[in-house]
Amino acid sequence: MNEELFLRQMPHSVEAEQSVLGAMLIDPRCIPDVIEALKGEDFYLQVNRDIYESIYGMFHYSMTIDPVTVLEQMRQNGVYDENRSRTYILQLMEITPTAANVMEYVSIVRDKSLLRRIAETAGELTVLVQQGTDTAQAVLEVAEQKIYAIRQGRNPKGLEHISSVLIKVFDQLNLLAASDSAIPGLSTGLPDLDMALTGLNPSELILLAARPGMGKTSMALNILLHAGKYSGKTVVFFSLEMSKEQLAARLIASEAFVDGKRLTTGKLTDDDWDKVSLAAASLNKTSILIDDNPTLSVADMNAKCRRVEHLGLVIIDYLQLMQAAGGKSHSGGDNRQQVVADISRALKIMSKELNVPILCLSQLSRANEARADKRPMLSDLRESGAIEQDADVVMFLYREDYYNKETESHNLAECIIAKNRRGETGTVQLQWLPEFTSFSSLERRHYNDEY
Image 1: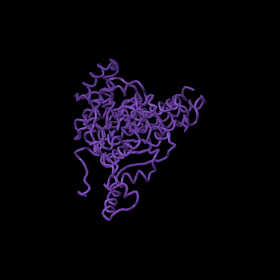
Image 2: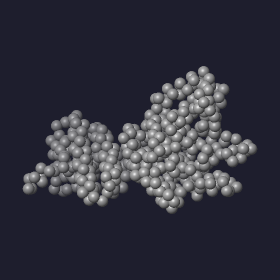
Image 3: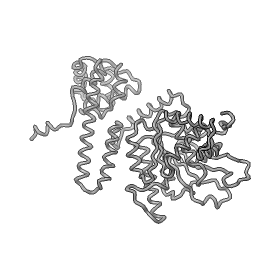
Image 4: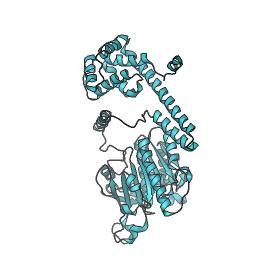
């Protein structure tokens, strides 16, 4: 029986783990490549994991790495064994044939680690099924989440020591310092808005709300188009209101600067056709994905996004049209508020899991129309329940000429940042271009005779 249990050990290769560590000690020049490919939990034996994590920390703080300094670091980390550590370090260097093959050893260690993660996940799913307390759909959702985490190389463990978190913060600061961009997040294409928000940042839930006809979808398509063209990432647009063809026509109008009415009616001039052709060619080069299924739940969207390579941004149009998990319909104000609260929480979890910004559009109630100053405020969010709490950023669109046709602020829009976890709140002035159904910065107004 004991022999059978021994043979059922989780997949691992002691020789590969030792050779990786030996190579790092023999030739520290290979350490950056190894650290890029492996994490501490990829090592099966605890002693090997302790040595690797000591080297990992030393590297990120630019410390000298050799057998003596590593042993000292292990002492400080509390993982030094007086009877064994020194001998084991020397043994690692002796049994490693050469550091030249280190990435071969890394590949073996990583493969065994993935097999262990898969085996652990399979075991957890088997327990869920045997318990019989969850539906097949719920178990499938858990399975997809866990497999996605494995594919992304993320460990689902909850507690993490502050030292490893600090290393990640330093990595992020180094990336920002080396970047040419003035903002850390994804650009919206509107410079003033970018500066106010520091761009659209990973794991953020961003809410864009306005009354119908104010330009929510137009703003979302502006951001989609700019991110699709310049971010180098794949961007996804879930439209629960408009069809794919309508969205594509709006994108063409915005990209080609062709009057939307002429595009809708097909009454295009020869010059318009040239612009439309160029715009279509430009859009073909982007990685923009569109889904117009009106019955999608957050779980459905999450499942679809997990399969997208190089995902950079998700946009959802719009919150009040979304369904609860399983497509359940609810009637009554209280029930609907709970559903919206559940949806908003699920969206926040989705943004963290996918590690991308999620821009979700939302309708406003009519409460603002009863006030003298009709600028929206947080309390105007329809069925706001928890969405105001879950969102990292809440923005409102407001145009004075929407309510007052005689105003001097014709075709001027305000993007009111009512909540911003990363920075200050305030108002960004934008230019509304109704013929192209798009927005631009005030200094970037478009004049048709230039084209």
